[in-house]
Image (cartoon, rainbow, N blue to C red; front, side, top):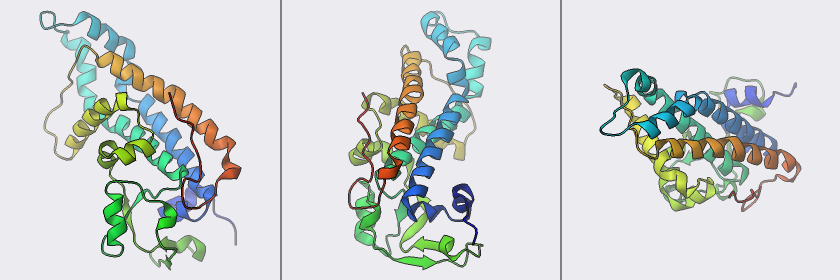
Length: 248
């Protein structure tokens, strides 16, 4: 039977990322690339120089003109989606290459592991090696119909990865970025029931977004290079399957 490429396999069965180390790392690289694209596509990142001008020239006694601020306001919610998507992808990419699950564990099947997963990552090998053939996955390739017993379709909540210390560490989030990422994510959650837009301009808003931009520009490329250079060393096992150099 003809081998199905990763992206086609993933569309058929997202749990294929647990089938082999090759799919695990390919998914991780795709998450990084797509996340970086979303980040760079956001209005606020494309207009950092204008944001710097606003932060320097604006004050309570000298508010910005409407034409200076309206682009940031009108794009604020969509930007929050794109930036949150970027860093959620980044975190899950880091989890995957270290051998952690990114899908939620069914508490009715594995209650203790599900409880643990709420506060810290769970290694793939901690879940019993019990596979089920799912008839809902429309393919003649039975190997692609395999799903892990006890795993749900939903992935770990982004808010959890920003809140719990064990996730923050495993996802490689930097402490100096957390406050901004939490604020962006909180605003992003308004997407479910939004009746207005807002954009808050602080003295350090430009500096905060500039640091995020530097991190995505430099560190995403660094992590991608590290992953690509050590693909042959990837393997499943208790503990990290791939060590990532601590970012500075």
